[in-house]
Image (cartoon, rainbow, N blue to C red):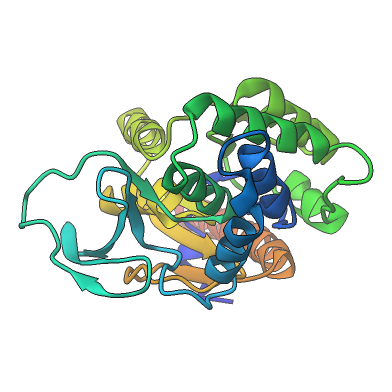
Length: 298
């Protein structure tokens, strides 16, 4: 694990939920199937599912970290604050937007949920159809036979992490489903604040700005998530610490303070933060005692 020097300074941790507190992608095939079901594109279902899987496994030119332009049905590759180039779906190079040119209607391909959403828009399905499929999948994920697995050891490590002042979870998922998932994982009581319908990335930018206004320093705030655009970029821009957790590769060129792939690693990070902060408090207590003793003796 990384140097505990900065871990010991942490006072606030912001957790994403989907893909961060649990890792699961089997829902994606069903999501795509449900979107195409009973539409005039239903006969293309197997091709759409195969496309989603190819992106997920890194076997397609479209990758995690790219942006999908609904307007042009093309992909954009980020560079700095703009875009370096465009890509066609077969990987051909297209002219990207001019520097500073606003690009409307973009979807960041940051996680398996985003892959399904992009495919829904590529196949020109209605927003209502995409939303219905999304809600259907989420309802299934806490019911047999599709219940997702979670690690009770990670849940315990987060619950036992009392050396920081605030533990916050932020999810863009709607309230009913977000709370249902947290209750299902038995982790809802472990957080000081829960934000559903969080409107990330803007929502997390607002939250961190509020924390800074409360007096927290940027280096005292850590954001952990699997979708860099939603969970990490806004926090890094404000000087906060970032932890990218995902089992998938990413074309996003940014460097993060931590790069994890598994929930075991996240559990270890929670334990390391607890240990680092406990040692900091113990050392601070010793320093105060020594200072008091010197004052008395002086």
